Length: 255
Ligand SMILES: C[S@@+](CC[C@H](N)C(=O)[O-])C[C@H]1O[C@@H](n2cnc3c(N)ncnc32)[C@H](O)[C@@H]1O
Image 1 (cartoon, rainbow, N blue to C red):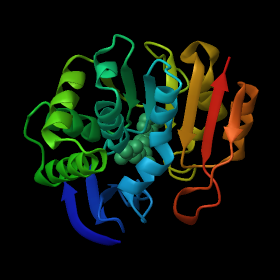
Image 2 (image 1 turned 135 degrees about the vertical axis):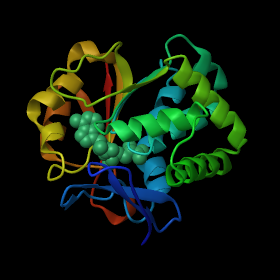
Image 3 (image 1 turned 90 degrees about the vertical axis):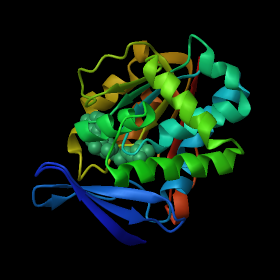
């Protein structure tokens, strides 16, 4: 893995760009003196997204369940782009379905703004533009799609508020509709302790936020999360973590 560029537009927003081992791009944010952790596994941002998060969409498709999703930690948007690409490849009609929605949350305003502007065809800093293009082109190859189709659908979904880009997720956040899939892609407890507070986890998992059939995925394996999932009637499916990690969480609730 190698650092290849640095971007800064203010004291508050300073970013290091890295090539991970599968040649996809990840970043770390630098806040004041503190450099936060890399957003993805150094073994591969793209491969990790496919391994940890894409099964949520596959399961929902296989079960013919509604696809209404919650993504905590937009970051570079690998998950959002993967969802749209996978649905375009497997069942495009779902993207035009009234039920379909991705509610994404991100605490960093610049990341929301660049992601949105890029897909709406507005100018964004070149390092971000190249990164989003790289993610789209890798998804296009993997799902055997044309990159332009992914771009057009992302634009349409953002424009029509089907990909809803929200600020920080907290213990008071209210979802606009219940979900059948949760991507919990927070930084570690060390970097973002607030997201790992029990009240925040309870807020994510509260009954009114979840449809009867619901999948939950995260790269992490913290016991506090497993305990809460079990209390909310999720069954934890044993899953080895990405690239040699002992474990990651994939859980299903079926009522
Ligand atoms: C591991 S990265 C997510 C990577 C991302 N899923 C992707 O596909 O590139 C974690 C992200 O969570 C964001 N974050 C931190 N606290 C948050 C909060 N309370 N609510 C929403 N996002 C938060 C960070 O700014 C960071 O972008």
